[in-house]
Image 1 (cartoon, chains in turn orange, purple):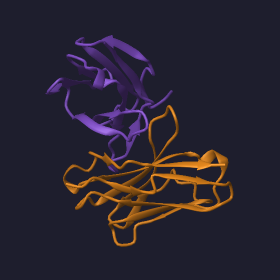
Image 2: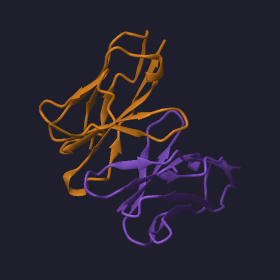
Image 3: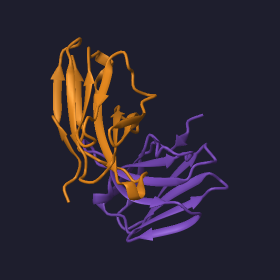
Length: 114
Length: 112
């Protein structure tokens, strides 16, 4: 079974530029999560989707971050404009309906904002 | 007070010894508990989960949960150098939502 797929794996941009991350969850997993992980910290939830509905986006900085999961499968997380403090690893995770809190992570996208 | 607390380490153990990793949490309503292993530069990998008080064993790993003390631990028997990684404790606070709160992780070093 293929795992969670993310792209790109690495991204370097200058501040004020836009950036987008893509995630394809494990097949059949209806719940998708976007996390941010800073060095030396645990992952912090940005947004959680149940199918195509964003059910928890309370930690998403909505002034510059946006996300979508239009058909309830793939998802995109966007930052516009990026700031220096956004440099981090962005992780996507998914979980199946049968064990909703057992989350499986993708490889992550390491973002560097210069 | 952090919701999920772990000692950042590093915790150094000799090869073949038992490594004991500890985690405390603040939300008494927490329902489920997870241990993830994260190698440097990699993403977290689920290794154990536990829902009920007591011990749960899976190969060389044992998760222990004590809800009264709000304490969860991970024991790794016969530690190997390949076990050297950061171990993240994650807690689902319940109340619906499948929201995991992660600790900052404990770095484990298994020495030859």
